[in-house]
Image 1 (spheres, rainbow, N blue to C red):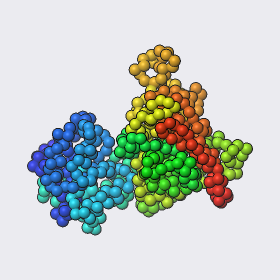
Image 2 (image 1 turned 120 degrees about the horizontal axis):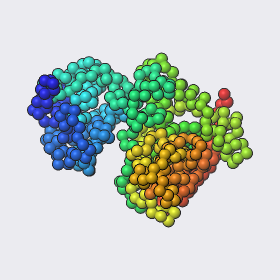
Image 3 (image 1 turned 30 degrees about the horizontal axis):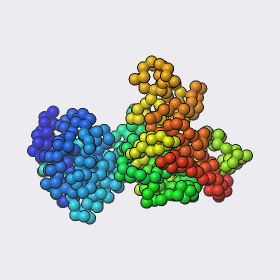
Image 4 (image 1 turned 60 degrees about the vertical axis):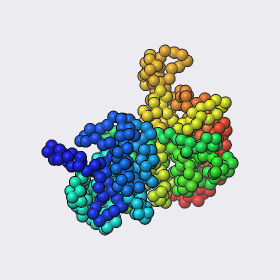
Length: 534
């Protein structure tokens, strides 16, 4: 207690816990978050106003800070009233980015921002909540990479300088060492790093039993920084044409053909993918790079997430020199019965594949070795939903538009939707009923009873397609359900038309909702014929 009181007194003497990283460095600085509370107190959501942030901004400007790196998560950002902390800081500084340390490849991204500041001879500030734990590791990591210090030496230098300056910096050399080596931090329970040897799905499930299921995706990756992204007219200018594209699954050539069919104009059109850019098809790496080249928006699909997890596992196995092999995911994936393979097409259906052809299709993740860090960042940042900024004419009605990979459970608020539903749901089943509409759910034909629904990946007794009970008010564009191909309902349109099985790749064009499609059969046939038989 006495030490805590002494530290608090020091904090009062040094405004905002501000100092440089070291006496030898004039580039990187550190502080606490604006309007930070002492001890373990946490502000209420929306309680920190722009007026309360202004003294922090004024102080940093007086110290010559030009750039800011935040190391905070969504829950911490919620403490700030509109327009939000990032927007407040963007008005005052040349560059502001938020890179939580648990995000894949975060150190490379943070390090590059510091190097950019150094090249411009501008001071850059890193801050977490109290400027102690996360911030201290960034300071020490910079000293390690810039001056060639060991983790122990960098930590000692940060601590020594902090003591001299009268500021608070925490010490955690093992975590610092791991952060620089692996490239992201495990300070949060939803971090994606796992120790070497924790390779299989089963071992990961055991590891995450203590975790909050809302914090980790079903495949084990960290949640993106923004789970539900509200787009603005900076993302999609008013009047722009929007092309919403179904599950591409690595069909890069077919994607280009579909863009041609849609008359895509890169200067005026915005492309949005419903997820599952990758896996199963001929060239997943090319599709990711094409999406980035198009500056396309996309939501996270289950195959995007699985590929991200597998890629991280493969990289960790190499980076940590683990005796673990990197093939567990591939072996498990190849052995697992696949509903899509057994249900989609046959030799006598247009675009269908024979059993022999299906057996030749390699379900594995070695292709992820072709992803570079920018590709991984793109995949890791994919949100679960996108909400378009304007209403669009769909079937003669002006509708708000949501994009999600698989679907949504009727009656549940967007923030209450589960990750496993948003990228795996196909059906819903009623789980309980109430007589109060305030309980949520869908009321059937004016009846007093209100049903509540539970998402189902596969059909079960009593389940129905989720779109059959979805009554808006938003119109949802989604993918994932290749069995049902194109789906149309008053408030939802399904765009997975089985591209990776040699059927079609489809798109909806807004405004209007016109559907365009091209066959993927030539590309899939060529891929199958070029794949060596086992």
